[in-house]
Structure formats: structure tokens, C-alpha cells
Image (cartoon, rainbow, N blue to C red; front, side, top):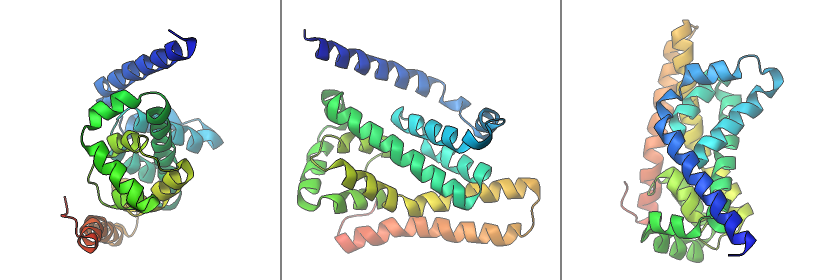
Length: 219
């Protein structure tokens, strides 16, 4: 077996082991744990948070916990930025892993859905990725890997992901921020809660609107 193939198999097995360990310990990933990791990091705390978010995305850990934590720790504006950068970086790493390392494994996991993705990307390119980021037809973590099997160009994939994940990211980041403010007894909590409810309603309605415009049944 060529050395390159051995290296690919070794990396693939390492990835599987890391995913298994991460899923086994996923309940330990919460706001208190993240806050403990970030305390004392100073100026590099945002970079550490982004790295944790990206790694969690690659390892199939739920991004919702991290998105809420980003809002609670960094506030609605910087939290949204850090959440988006982390999610996009993780999605890009998963994309590259599928394209160059774990093609067969991802194809087996995604099954017939890969054919739908291939057809959609070939027909619409980045616009199809934008649609999938707005309308969750596929699980987020699996979608990142599955899109690596399509012919879409990496810059188009990353940019479309960053832009069209932003509505949901902002809504859930704000929710995390409001939760932290409520726990602290901050001022204007009722107004912030109302804004959070409006943002969540928007995040829930937007996929339905986009689905209807495209003639796709909403999930």
C-alpha cells in the first residue's frame, strides 16, 4: 500500500476515534465548562472559542450549545461574529476532510442524499448551498461533510455558508445573551426577551418562506 494511502487511512481512523470520544463526552460541553476554559485566556479567548467551535463542528457535536454560549460570553455582536467564524471554519474543515480524506465513509453515511446534493450543486452552485443553510433539509454536521463530495468550489461554499448561516446565528446568539442577562438581573431584560422572541420567530419563519418560494415542502 502506498505511503499516501496509509497516511489517509491513519488520519481517517484518528478522525473516527475523535468523533466517538467527542460524542461520548458531549454532555460535558456546556456554558460553565466553556467559561472555565476561556477564563484567563485574555486576548486569545475569542481565538480559543473559535477553535473549540470549529473542532466541535468537525466532531459532530451540537453547535446550538456553543452558539448560545457565544452570546452569553461575548455578547450579541461579537458573539455572532465568533460563532459564524467558528461554524464556517468547522464546516470548511469538514468539507475538506470529505473531499480529500473520507470520501467513501461520507458517501455511505449520506446515502442517496448525496445524489440530491450533487444534482442541486450542479444546477445552482453556491445558490443551492445558500438554500441549504437557510432551510435545514439535512443535519448541519453531516451536510458539511456531504457537500465536500460535490463539485462546488471551496471559496463559494465557505462564503455562502458564512453569509446565509448568519440569520440563525444572530437569533440564537442573542438568545444566549438574553439568558445571561436575565441570570445576572441586567436592565431591560423584558425588552431583550421580546427581541429574542422576534428573532427566533424570524429564524423559524425564514426557512418556510424560502421553501415556499422555491416550491420545496418545509421541514
